[in-house]
Image 1 (cartoon, protein in one colour):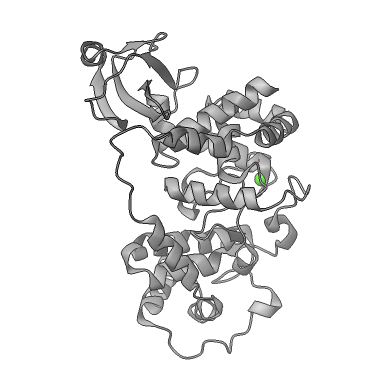
Image 2 (cartoon, protein in one colour):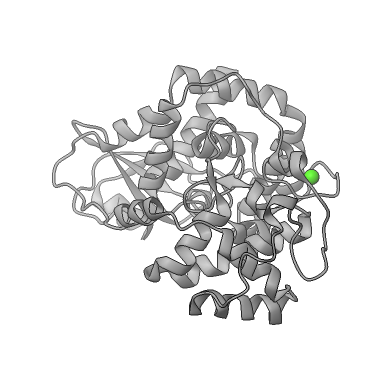
Length: 357
Ligand SMILES: [Ca+2]
C-alpha cells in the first residue's frame, strides 16, 4: 500500500497544478435521481438495454445474482452496466507490481528521507495552508465532533490527493469490475467493493459511469474505498448527500473514519526516542513495555501520555536510524494505510502545514 502512495505522489508531481482548486464534485455535476426502481440512475448514453441480452461470464452472473437478491437490483439493468464496463489490463499489471514487499535493508540508506521529501515540499506546504485556511471552520467542527485534530485531516487529504489536486482519472466502474472479475487474487475483496460502489451510486442518484478515482477504485479528497464510504463517510455539510468529492464531506468523513478506529482526543501520536535499539523488531504493529525499551537503551524525549505499552518505530535517516515510541493514535493512522512511513508522513505533513500557517 505504501507503494500505491508513492505511485500516486509521483503522478501528483508529474501533473501540473492547473489552478482549478477545490473544483466541482462530479456527483454534484452529474446527479440524476436516487432510488431508481431496481437499479442505478443511468444517463441516456448508458441506458441501452440491448447491450447485454445474453448471459455474461459466470462470475459476473453470480455477482448480479447477489445484487438482485441482496439489494433488489434489476438483473437486466445490471447486466447492461457490467457489459459496458471496460476491462483495464493496465490496472491488473499495476496491481501485480504492488504485490511484492521490499525486504528491510541491513544498513541505513535514507529510505525515510526519500519518502518524506515527496510529501513535505514548499509547494505542498502552501497548498496545505490554503486548504486549511479555506476550511478552517469545518476542520474545527470536525475536531469538536470527532476529536480528530485539523493537522491529521489536513495530513491525510494532503498525502492522498494533494488536497484534491489528484483524485484519479480512472473510471471507478472500470477499475473495480476489472479487479472483481479478472484479478482472482483479490476478487472477493474487489467484488465487495464493487457491490458497495453500486449501492452508493444508487443511493446518491449518480450514474456509475460518471465517477473517476484511483486505479484501485479509491474516491475523492480522502481516497475512500466504497466500503469505507459505506462504513464511515458522513454528510458533513448537511446538504442531504454524502459526497467524497466535496471537501467538507471529505473532512468529516476522514474524522469519522479515525474516530471509528479509536482515535483518542487530545492524545499524542508518537514520541521520539534518545538512543538506538538496533536488535529489536520495529514497526507499527510491534508491542513493547517501556521497561523493555529502557533496558535496550531507549529513552523518550517527552512524556508518553501515561502509556506503558508502545510500538517501536524506526526511521532510516541515511547515516543512522531514528527511533520513536508509537502510541495508539499512531496505530490509528496506519488503519488508513498499513505503513509506518505513510502514517509518519501524514502526521509530519500536517504538523508542517500547521507550522507554516
Ligand atoms: Ca454533503
